[in-house]
Image (cartoon, rainbow, N blue to C red; front, side):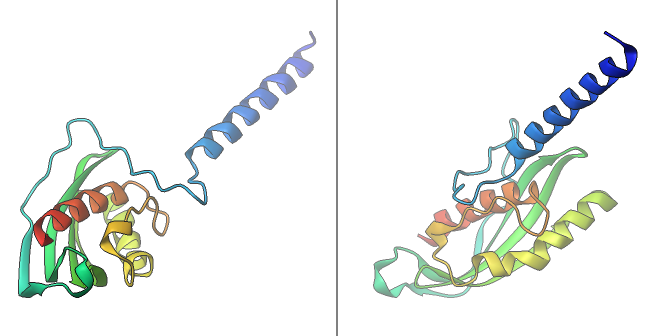
Length: 157
């Protein structure tokens, strides 16, 4: 095979490989599977309700109130933590606040983007329906968010 043809074949194979990798990493429209937990990840902090907590109407099984928890996830820079505060009314999220705990500028950037876009994904939804995979370009932070939501669900019952 001539060198120029060989280079073209290698370039084509590399391009197809890259396209396949990108396609495999992209979430599908109906993807509702939970973000995989990183091995060795652990829960940090504690879940704590604040404000008035009363039984929820409509049989949602969750007490109304504001709850907070920290979730962890693994990034290329190591284990990261994100703080989540959810306000529930009848099992529906009425407010969400994110507390950023960045360990480096890259984490600060992605947690900031996540914090700016999460309200549009979760406010007005039932807490049992929450399972975010990518928010405003940040896909890893969602793992910590989902972990914190599970802690909050446990505490709010």
